[in-house]
Image 1 (tube, rainbow, N blue to C red):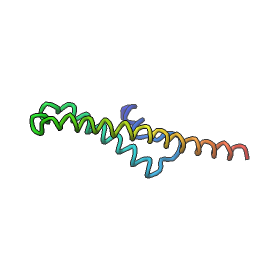
Image 2: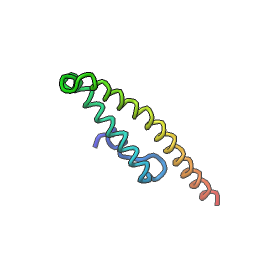
Image 3: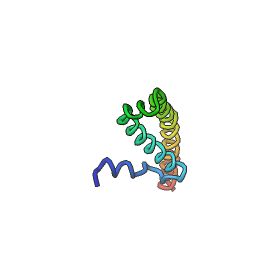
Image 4: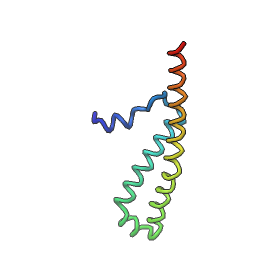
Length: 91
């Protein structure tokens, strides 16, 4: 398995909660849809008109909101998990 694919599947420090996994998979899915939308922009524009650009813009806006929320949530979960490991090691 390529390293990049292994890294996509591997959660960071803390065990991944169902909510975080759902957020991560949503982000990856939107990135895939965005890739296809950009690659097929000309046919989309021919089929639905100027709304094709709006679809791409909406996907980018969704990512602009979701990615920071995911990063902050995941970092907080990782920090809590690593702090609990440190407390267990000190005991």
